[in-house]
Amino acid sequence: MKRSAKTTRFVWGLVLGLALVVGAWLALLAGQIGREVPSTQWVEQAYAHKLAAADAIKQPKLVVVAGSASMFGVDSGALEQAFGRPVVNLGVNAGILPPYIQQYARQAIKPGDWVLMPVEYPMYHERYSINQSFIDYWWTHPGFRRLDVNVPQLAQVLWLTSVYRALAGYRGLPQGFAVSGLYGPQNLDQRGDQVNSQAAQQQVWMRELVERSSVQDYGANARTWNANWAGWKTLADQVTAAGGCAVFVPPPMLDREAYHRGEELRYYQSLPDVARQQGLNYIGSPLQTMYPMDRFFDTNYHLNAESRMLYTRQLLEWTRPAFDACRSSTPTRPAE
Image (cartoon, rainbow, N blue to C red):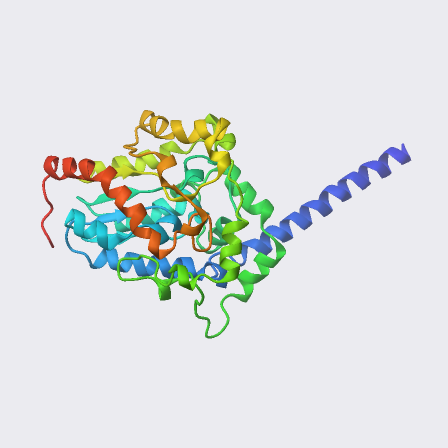
């Protein structure tokens, strides 16, 4: 009996100790919710720059919605000239995932706007996945149902947040902090396109990042259970209901031999049809927007400035008929 009682006390002590540790950790995390940290500032300030540009436009416009592949790859000035309406490039960082990208898109889009979405491939799947960029951003901008963050994602945020990230939240922004480097509003033009990305400006370490970038296995990871079509369809339906048009197209991406065989080839060949079956107006072929290594600046998604027009010409060829049809079928919203 004594031994049994000791065992029971030990188990309860262990449970209580574990509960205290977990409680203390959760309290530590909760105390830094909403605090700004340096790692998210370039994203926040880039979006502030782009949303201000969108808000300043008082007539129907075209909004580009995606991650940084569009920030580097789309020539918004060429789109503006071709379609005869102002353009805002809302692409910033695919790492913050659809919940935030779609939230920012809704802030920028007004009734009658057209929306072009060169969405990076992982954002059509990986419904229950997160990454470090998302973790950092979530603690600064927390949300659950209103953001379309699901329970598995929230659980991973709590489980995968490091002590370093928690302490960074308490430290906040250093006095006089300013965003610097390649990413951020200091390297965006008035429409939100990346600047200072010419091939001649590519440093050795940038080229090495492109060369060492991973061969993606999006086809192997794309499954019905982790699909994320519904969130994109909801956004597209809202655009249409407000008198606009939403068109999905392939993003630019570094070409790899592995993408032209087996499961990966089947994924890219079938993606447009699968997207259309899910209710998205998807135009174009992913295999046609894969480019060789010398076209990229610092990642396998970031085109250099000289290649921006190559991709944009392809977009214009694909989307002009769709947007022309939209123009003829919807009334024009007058300038405010």
